[in-house]
Length: 277
Image (cartoon, rainbow, N blue to C red; front, top):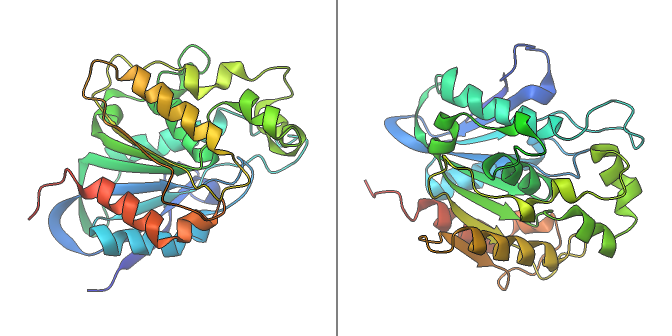
């Protein structure tokens, strides 16, 4: 059976807005299946859902689950003059999740919307964590409705940015390149540090997988180490559904997504708690 693809499905009322649209990959079936969502990276300023067509197809092939890949509005200009700044990128993704739960019919594939698996890469790891950890003190607009929180079973974070001040201490040129345009030119970005966020009070135990390649020269391993340690602290005394994979990958920052090892790790993590047919 071949993979079906529907492209440029709007999730916002502005139907001609390609930045608020998504692509849908699936094998036609009447059996309700969990849904995988991959959110692209690109330093809050680049990339497109179409760039990850091959990965989406491979995820469908490996898991059998349908896959959605959304776009979101980008900080295109180096001076931030287009006014797309944090948290707008993440707000778009949260709007997309809300759309999936309330307005989407599946388009030929029966989707079990009570079981959603999220994958974030690079800046989108920050975006997903800003939504599903409690960022309400700094960005209350990123508070997801209970039905979205309850639907998310697991989150995969790869090559992520979590502590911006720590990142800038190691890569100071990133401030001008993409941090200041996306967040504003600030003396400190501590308010946007994921490694300071608590769990949401309404949150069930989402499983987390933190991935980082030893060959990544664009975002150093310290980011994922700090995120992993933070998640372990958050889940102290609980089941601690937190896994780290930092020894198996050797590819560069974006090349990870084309790695057979990455695909195997992510696919196995997603399907491990899904009952076999």
